[in-house]
Image (tube, rainbow, N blue to C red; front, side, top):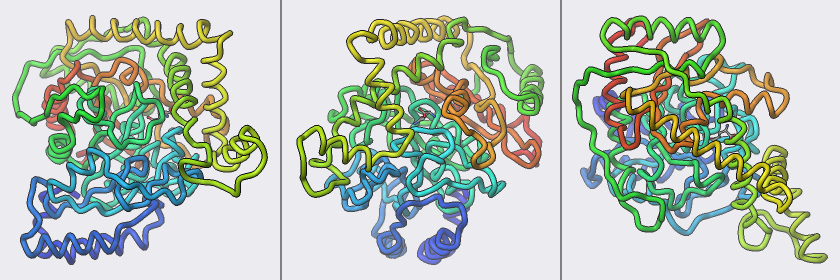
Amino acid sequence: MKISEWRSEESCYEATAKMLKRIEKSELNAYITVCKDDALKLAEKYEKRELKGKLAGIPVAVKDNITTKNIRTTCASKMLLNYLPVFDAHVVERLKQEGAIIIGKTNMDEFSMGTTTETSYFGVVKNPYDLSRVAGGSSGGSAAAVAADETVLALGTDTGGSIRCPASFCGIYGLKPTYGLVSRYGLIPYANSLEQIGPMASCIEDLALLLEVIAGKDERDSTNVGKSFKFQRSFKDFKVGVLKDMGASEEVMEKFNEVVDKLRKNFYVEEVSLQSLKFALASYYIIAMSEASSNLARYDGIRYGYTEELSGSWTEFFSKIRARGFGEEVKRRILLGSFALSAGYYGKYYLKALKVRKLITEDFKKAFGKFDVLISPTMPSLPFKIGELKDPLTMYMADVNTVPVNLAGLPALSMPIGFVKGLPVGLQVIGNYFEENTILNFAIEVEKTLDSSER
Ligand code: GLN
């Protein structure tokens, strides 16, 4: 549902109540926590004209790794099952300042580690287009909620594709902003040098508005660059690079190529290959797991979350809590990350991965000397069946088209371009640093080429 449609409802209170009912009856499992009473109170306030701002009276769902004061924030982990934060993340402060109604906290892969939400302690999020399939991950709850009118807007986070993958699988828009544009203050870290909070919505204008609200200066995040974002409509003679290194299954490629052919009629389109991209996935997983092993060291059973009665030595207690509090995928990553960072292997793995990261960044920089946008299919396949990805490596491979962007810190959008076998297909549009406006304006041009049924 678009903001304009929501605004055309006669009563914000009634519409919110209706949305809450829909969530209650839903089979999707998009939410971990629903803020029913608070949402209704805010809707009532809006009706009394006491709620002001750019998002006044608009429901926004927040991924459950983003800290919300006095609202349980679990990261979909047993480890944080009853964690009640005492402060709001920067982006949540901004939502509140602009009058948004926080409708609930959305389901996700545990600590954002996954591509299907199957690693969630709360169970998988189902795809609104086919309940036997996944909604994608890790921000699967946010994407499914937007797609199924269980919210109007949502926030997700993207470390290696977690906004774009579920956006693609659920047929909505999701943007991973340039690293440093949106403050990570209050985002519970998985791999902090890669991740950004970003907007998810059902049209480009709404996506842009939510980005305007969350982007901007925040001194509490030392990697925040202090830039703000304002959506500006403009037309450019876009130079489009089609990334040859990012492929997909035949059926997805067919849909993608249809769009490319249409774009050729209006724009300069050329295929381009970035040599370093073939190492991106390996580099990403080394870096992400290394950072994860360090970031998740804080869960010791004493300071946060899951705990038991103190017993045994420090090591015994620490190990017991972590063995019981974390799920399998999280443990795997902590182990592999610790290994990659260990004295004997640091140079062989972690340092090498950083070098590859640099090469990828340089390759992208070169490409943006020539092109305004680079495009690819967002995901290499249609949404997976629940349980289809049996081993972790197959799951990691699904991120092949999305992770390079995070390694380079670039902004990228996933937008719907139609359906194959009744399932949504997403187009990835990558822009140069802080060129979110270029991406969004290009996306508007892409939309013009699509058939109305596909839109
Ligand atoms: N699927 C990727 C991973 O598991 C990306 C996750 C994310 O972006 N949070 O690391």
